[in-house]
Amino acid sequence: MKLIRFGRPSEERPGLILPDGRRIDASGFGTDYDEVFFGSGGLERLARWLARDGGTAPVVPDGVRLGPPLCRPSKIVCIGLNYRDHARETGQEVPKEPVIFFKATSAICGPNDDVVIPKGGSKLDWEVELAVVMGRRAVYVDRDEALGYVAGYLLHNDYSERAFQLERGGQWVKGKSCDTFAPLGPFLATPDELRDVHDLQLWLKVNGETKQCSSTRELVFDVPTLVSYISQFMTLLPGDIISTGTPPGVGLGHRPPRYLAAGDEVDLGIDGLGSARQRVRAGGFTAM
Image 1 (cartoon, one colour):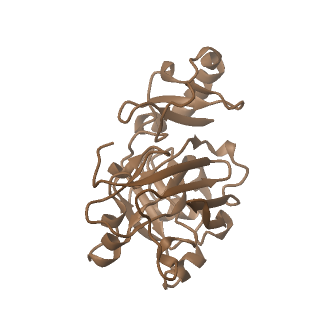
Image 2 (cartoon, rainbow, N blue to C red):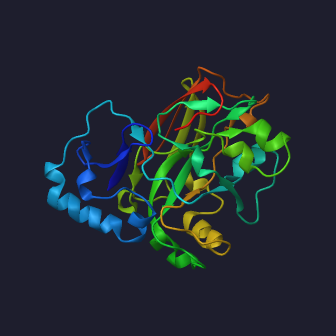
Image 3 (cartoon, helix red, strand yellow):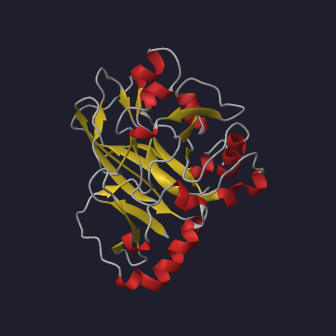
């Protein structure tokens, strides 16, 4: 299945994309896509509802805004330097263990919402990433069992304000967490929608120019490794997101670095997980 949420910010309703491309309103299912949904067999119940009632569900009109495909989770766990070439372009060694940092969930927005340059920001950067959504509570999970804890996958642009991240001291989180810095979607795809999550092309363009083009084959640490590893240090709750890192081609890696400015347009996508577009604008923090 392909799960969407649509409508005005903070007023999104659940929906689905059908195999023929039609988008339907799943409000009749009775619940949104939140922690309780994922942790209580919600995907299985949603599949039964779709088979029974999907044919009579209202169609979502073209042009309606898409929001993030799931409700705000308890946490976004990000992985740094998880593509070998990206580590090299930033001048760092390929890590021996996954590099973990957090991104505030208040950064989440819809896939095609504007990305806003924060107050005092000067080095806004892009990062196309495969994101993993947890479907079960995960604690001390064995790698061989890890994929059984995954609810699905989605597209994430892990925006970064490099001046905040690298020049202001402390941890990376403050350069990753500004409002609008985590556009998700357009949809959440359940694992059966993807032939092989470790063989997906991912790409990103700025103003039509390709900046990133790689494959999840190049991940240093694959999805089951990440789920298992993170679960050794913290409880992963249903709906939590793991963002698996970005390939080479970020603005920081250009010589000289190339950062985003107001008016720029960023297009990105992953095979099987759709595409998104964000326009950059100035304006400081903005409530979503």
